[in-house]
Image (cartoon, rainbow, N blue to C red; front, side, top):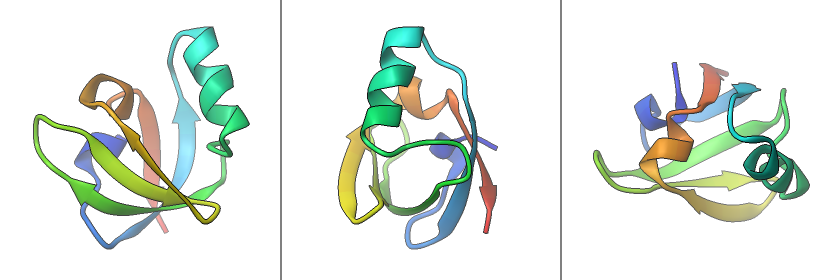
Length: 73
């Protein structure tokens, strides 16, 4: 499943990120690495996904969220 499929108030583990190298490096610099636990705070279909990673709230657009593969924790 991808981040865009994540449900609010649930915790997931990042499994894989498949984005352009620059975007992937930026997300990893923000702490979004493989194996990291994230909590989806808000997920509006067609909009952005807001999640908590390592104590920081991040928001990504739908296209980026579709490229972040997650597993239920």
